[in-house]
Image (cartoon, rainbow, N blue to C red; front, side, top):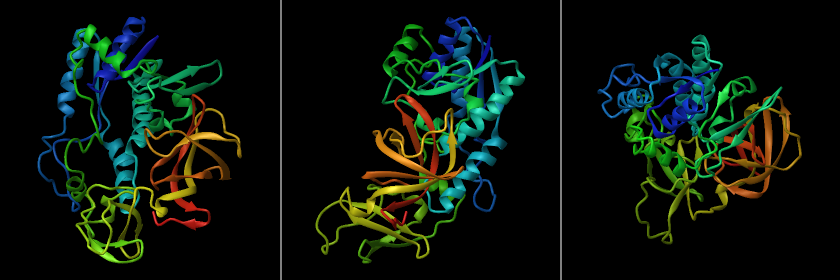
Length: 375
């Protein structure tokens, strides 16, 4: 049985590749080039400085070394156009709308489990595999996406938009392992990536300053920073640079009118171009108890309206008990009467039934009872 694994040049996918080989699969690797690192374009379409910081070519070199060690063929494929059209354009449009997108979810949906799957199938693959911390249970007529054993690394949140058809063709070789065990396997096998630092952030941004990167594509629109009572206490650089619940980087200095204490982003007024801030981690405006979400995707079985499930509203968040109701096939309303902090439009609400990831939807509007939050 032939399996083609997405090899990123990191330790997780490297160990996944080794495990597949050890298990006797006819295995090949494929490195995806999703971003043109030679140039970035500014808002007028003009090239900006060379993107020397992007580690993409370093990652490809590392992937080559691992494949040489394991005696496995490495394919290389460019999905730059597909990534721009389905992930990066989405990313920019969400920020234009004042929302906080999660491009990793769309990358899985459109690139890793769509474009990659199609290309791998053309190369004769029966299955594709990824180094995600997730598990899959294949049954005769359907497959279930399960949480990764390492709860701190579980990546099913980012897989909430994949389909049953895609999951039927997927394997996750490291999903049953803890991160420490993955590192141990890599070191014992002397893999080239055994001690490589984990990548963080969005792949096309890398270690660069996020605001500076975004300015290449979207013009800044500075405006007023106002308190929850309407007092002007500063100026923001552009609403797109801030997310609900944010504390660091707001740029508010000392103000004798207010008690000492941290300021948090509590909302955005898009019409007035104002950033709304308040003091206190659990400011009243940061708490909601229901939200509306769209782009609904159920991976295996359609969950039952009104039944209590567990949900995450952002990656690595603790489970929250929720119920929901269907608005239509593509929209749901999710209820969490206990109240949850900083539920943010653009992020995903992902539902679980115990170990099974049911799927999810993209958050559109956030409410406390019937009062809409300015998020």
